[in-house]
Length: 417
Image 1 (cartoon, rainbow, N blue to C red):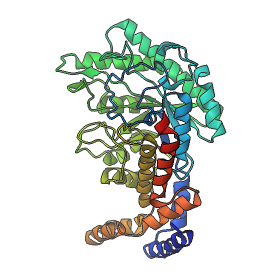
Image 2 (image 1 turned 90 degrees about the vertical axis):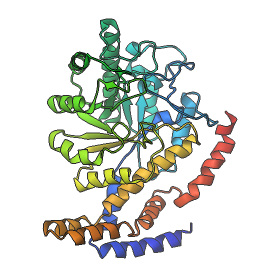
Image 3 (image 1 turned 45 degrees about the vertical axis):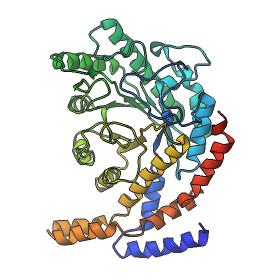
Image 4 (image 1 turned 180 degrees about the vertical axis):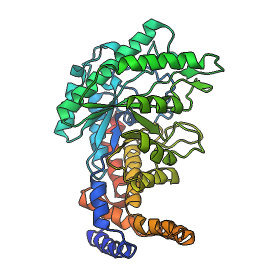
């Protein structure tokens, strides 16, 4: 797209938004400051580097077999940088514990240390990409159906030690990058069929968490992630939303809201304002569930748009961390990164361009026709011209022009793997 056309459309958009009381330049400045946490596992279908022959288990499944999957740490890094080059702004990278630089040696989960992630820290610094972290309780011989809530003390202690070490790694990352590392804890624990020991397993999980969080760190932020159900745990999930909400509020932990971890008719956006009243921060994992937690690539749909609008309406951009969490193995994986990240940003720019002051004025005056009318008209305001300018300013492809660029990378690189 020609630069002069982008600029001309942008100038018209600035005038149009000014007519409804919106400062476009301010919106662009705010969007520039929002760093998404890109997930490393889209590059290799959640395989990691612990064991090249490992098979996904513990409620995790990546469907599809599109050619070109990253096979090692160098290829994962290469693909992430390529994807980031098409995403405007400056972003973070979210690592799972199985993505350590293990130098070809097997290191069990209860033995991982910061040294196994030093090269990631150096790589992140070199490329201006700060790191976040996750413990990994799935795809392991000791995963089973229960980890931190396992009645077997030996197995439970194994996962407690693993998670303690993950917190130490996250703290080392935060210290190295001089910015807190978000440390997320999600476990798949649950039951495929009816259980009569709900309280017992949740008591075990609470006790495990209490032990894990005994040590205080200054350079990491602890997040606890709930789930409605998982594959093989359809009837009962130990770490439910109610469980983690209570634990998070009581123990000052960040609650992670994954958009795929709730009932299909449940509004995650509606939870934002309630959580903000009782927790200091929120972590979002943005995905796209189709009937269940299927981790489809995020698109610019109503769910994501409502989520972005609620964060902005609550003036909570400084308190809400936004990460991506999907893994589609059926399409070009770099393309999946780019589509999902840009879709999330498109929702954020629309939220930032909402004529909120006028809408709130209508609402305060009980002018509900006017409020609804402006909400509807705002949908067709020229936000896309503002988005194009954002891409142009950040030196990334505008519009669909990233498609042939990713195709070239596939021809030259990923198709030869």
